[in-house]
Image 1 (cartoon, rainbow, N blue to C red):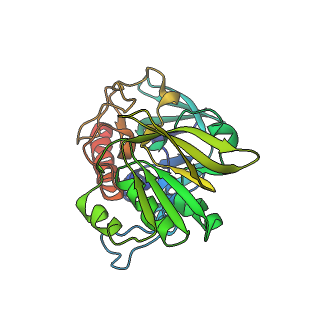
Image 2 (cartoon, one colour; image 1 turned 30 degrees about the vertical axis):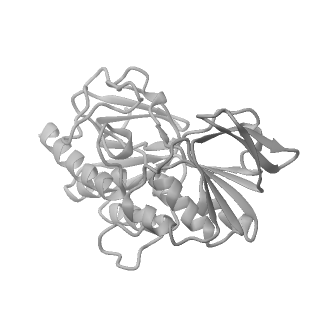
Length: 304
């Protein structure tokens, strides 16, 4: 007979490993399915300054590893496999992975959200060869060179700030005439002397041979096209929730996020959504961790 877990957690991000720690500490039989490494998207973040307990900050990879060790200390298990589908139609839920089928009484979905692409010609082909989605991962390749950052939210501004300490010049391209980022980040940008704003503009074309040599940006008000010489492009225009593998197993909103409130309960009893993948107002490491604790509590109530 197949082994039936008390809880399968899909995704080893901060929400997933917090749920694993709480559930394992409560004596539940728990396995975490992670396709890459502990921490999820958090592992790609260089400096996390707003997570309590680390007054000098901590890099996302290290924090992810600490969370994994904390969960495994209490008996949680980690399996490295990609989840390809689910079946929540019975009391015993089935999770299909690249390593076979797994079964559990409850499931916690903690798959997060992936970076959105620009959707322009040449972007896919040039990914990793001038087009990037993680400044802390790839910024070091552009020391003393020129880069373009696309976006206007917190992530884009954080990318621009980080890159400004490495590169010769940063162009920040935003399709509005002011940033959406929080005031604390906007204030920091005002102190950067190697950054130029390109307002009311969208990236329309990538100039490249084997690698990126520049971009074309279109002013959304006037229609004017401007060419900017640049060695690299960092795209930071939001994220797409990783929910395609779910099919119609749970209710999902128009943006692709799992419908779940602060209880983390989904439309299916015994299935919970935590972290960036669920509908919520604020997507941060600390809110994902809170979700994980709540999901474990709700799952315990369900099982009892």
